[in-house]
Length: 185
Image 1 (tube, rainbow, N blue to C red):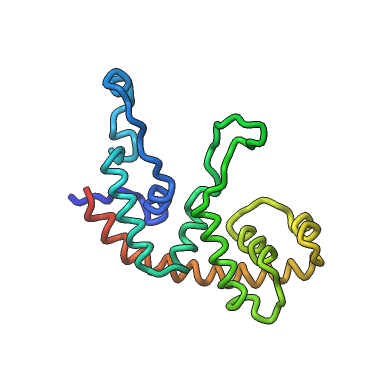
Image 2: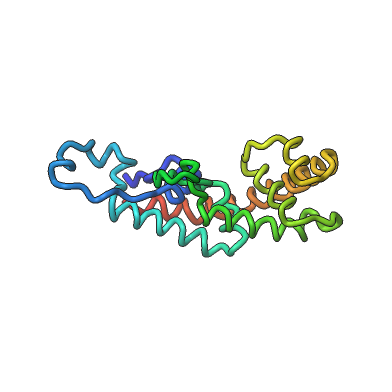
């Protein structure tokens, strides 16, 4: 029986964009670790990196915009930082996620907000809101110096456009990744 590695395409994407690899451990430390089967069906080390890479390759083959949508949805926004410097917040921004949001904001300017004159920070805030950033609309409007009802209309247009685009991308990925995920053992 050819059982797939992941329960769904979403699970495969979550794995690929959150895969961190495994640290190099001494033999004594490895002996005390949980078995590979408990680490996501044994996807540790080179096997996990290969699986994550194959999934990302298929996503990248769809084009820059679909890839940006997937990165913004599934990649972590930040990574923990333990530098302990005075200015450290305890995390650092994931540059890949940030670049994806910037790319999406540029496309949203034309495709979703064509009739609105908007600045990049406003478009970026609308896109970040779509992908779950927890800043309130009132706070966003104050920070961006824009009327809250105008911002609300823009967020609605961005949400409708990105939801439609995301649905199309996920349908395309279902076909591609279902084949790949079920073929890898």
